[in-house]
Length: 146
Image (tube, rainbow, N blue to C red; front, top):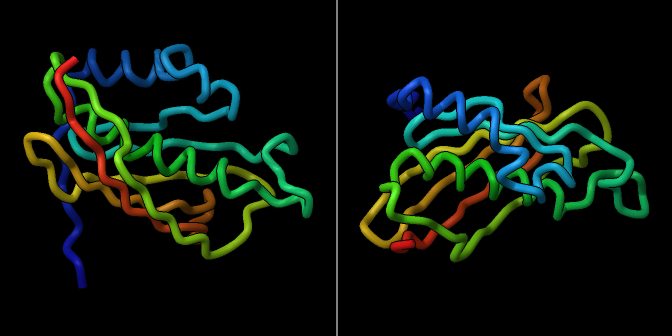
């Protein structure tokens, strides 16, 4: 059984600013309705409420919307581990969809598994608010100087 990892808190002002500014800093988040629930160094939770505009033809959430929440959570988790002079981009990401999502909200909880000087590996679990596992993902990010 895997031990629960403890993540270091961000400075309170930085954490509050990230949570408050995430929708305006990321217009794509606003388009989908995503919000940042919580963030620490190497860990983050992003929320995606179900919306009819996120559906595919069968009325369930499109995989791209779920993927977006998962990718966003990994990116924010990494944000607390990089220097202010650095930025990052998704290099590669894989996701396995396990159940459909058609009501309520999703929570994408991400953790950075390993961070090097130029790349980082993060994993993400996407669940409903009641804890049903919807998807699992693994993402590699490239870290670059701005």
